[in-house]
Image (cartoon, rainbow, N blue to C red):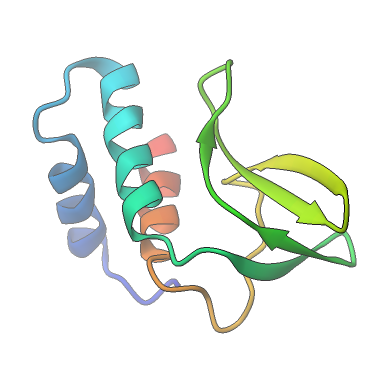
Length: 103
């Protein structure tokens, strides 16, 4: 991540939101790209603990979250707060695009 230029990120956002009207539809368009393109599952470290990211979801408050698990413990973490492993999973550039869009 971090290797895309501003123009590339803005082109990705345009691709995801081309038919979207309003913030909710734009968020849904970006969420759909994350859902389709992010290589899942992947393992990352949250607060020093290894967790498995199993997907992405829209929370009731409209945030895009990543449901994470460790054993039988489950917790959703906002995609903007999710630390990514190195190397980042395939499709992680869509998180970067969402982060840019979210401002």
